[in-house]
Figure 1 (spheres, rainbow, N blue to C red):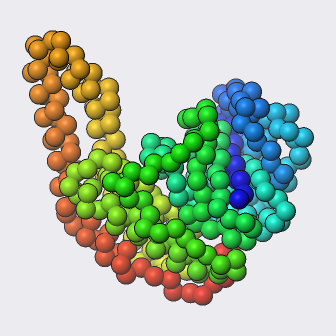
Figure 2: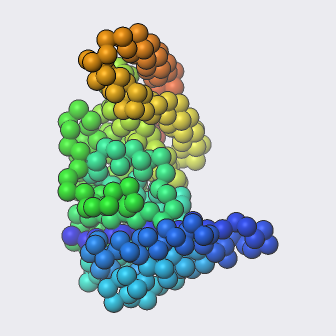
Figure 3: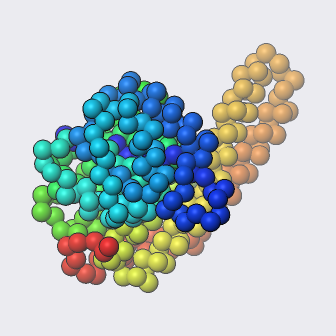
Length: 341
């Protein structure tokens, strides 16, 4: 087993307009967030043997803020290719980590880190999966437990999310295994020498299975399946970007655009969570003691039903048919063993 920590740099400043992006320093908030993280690290059992860091000022300043909190605080490797690196570049770099290294800390940027996390994570609590599909915040730390013996086997769907700081302050003891929210039909089984094309095909297959496992229940209005479908759409976009060198450009671009539009449209279902958790549940509970609240409850239930109805109508329309067709017809078109730089 291997451990990978992904740390997005703390928030940077844009106040100096004459600075190039590479030289942007941490903002006041970024320095405070990094200091809070440093105070929390001793409780996290982080013991990276290798630290890979973007050479951008905001990235290695983030490392500098937490270095003393790390056991032995090993010197980071500032590698130019990690600056604003895509998920494909990060994936290729991690596959070259020496076999003797068991724990790695990678400090970098979005969207590459966020895309990489979505590409790798197979098991995670549903709420955290939805949060990550929306955005990986600045100074957020993810701890992934990797089901592999050597880094050369590093591949999509090989990780369990064990920490998402600061969303959760403690290790995550288990993942969401609710069968009603099917995530993947099968775990990836890859050989050590799998080609880049093989990785692309495996990632596409599992993402396709993830979407199909939730399509029917999402179209029926099951809120958790709609959330899962949104995660699948977000991951599909990541797969298309990461392996853009082995998919037909025109078909991949069209499918990526469709996935993005569906993802945004289905975002309305997130408002149902707010309605249920902060309005409807307290109102239903209060209704037991205050029968006069029944009219308010019924109006809120009607509003919820109307919103869910709009989502269901959208899922029953042409975009979903186009998505199914795109997933069925997309395939690799090249035999590339290495990603593009």
